[in-house]
Length: 425
Image (tube, rainbow, N blue to C red):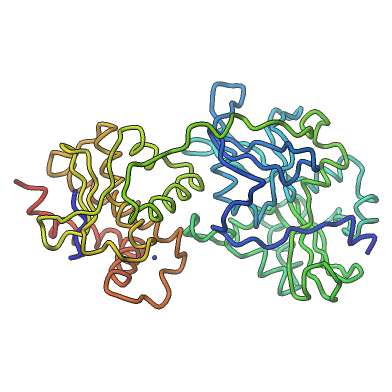
């Protein structure tokens, strides 16, 4: 269980846009953690109340929904805007929750444990007879006959050909969250946003293109208080769904938090490591994982101390229930220290959940999983690896993340060789 160094105007007012918020930005005072997710008051209309986004709801069939985790996987606030409704069910039987830009639709059948997709909100608005209303807001009507004669494959070819505006096309094809979604292609974009349902169309100071599940604006002219020219932003489809009564009135009423802030997750650590632990608490909140909660519940201490193995950077001792980070690293960047602690927190979670850690194969498997978790944390902090590494530890953590993601089989083989002395007694 050792991490060794031997081994990244009118219409303008009606069509409010989502301001760019960088992934990983600190939460505003208006939103905070609650049991099972996060609570947002930004869309509460100044009422002091807001909307809960939870991983602890139920789909009515005995299966837990995971709107919060899926919201983050799909890019969170920068892609979808703030949550703008409570959970509700429509006559089609699906469970929904509105955000400013979209309708989240829960799909319990998606492996491995259900997933969220964006609903075809602009198609739904068409069926509700709202195309003229949308046109008055600068959103083009859908093309009713694309010439595909009902063939989906033909429709894909034809409609992708409507992506003639390079900036909108680039936004449509872009991975919304590279830190969480490693592989992305055109079919992923179709699954997320739907197919184009209009050609790009100039509307006042911007160009709009409509899709089944979203609409994008490319700002062309400079307008005070609006995105600068060249910005591509989503039109707030979820807010339009609320405005035109696709979202039931009862679901639009802001609520109190799902629970009080409750007992915070407090990990027993030393001052030198507290900033690193705070980063990992943010990671768990963002990803819906429970590594730090496990440490808190089992009173695992995270300390700086000498480690007998001179090549070891960190060590988890089940007997003492202590994570040690080498005292030679006490003054390192908190991001680096967080990554080292994350590795050992994986071992602690394995131990307390009864995973096999004693057999040679169990030892190799849990070490590999610890390196994978460490890599996930590193790429959450540095999606394209840490730029301009300053020292050998930065270089080491970059190289581990790169190796785990680029060739896991080769990494596992190297790990097996390096950890032979630890895993085979």
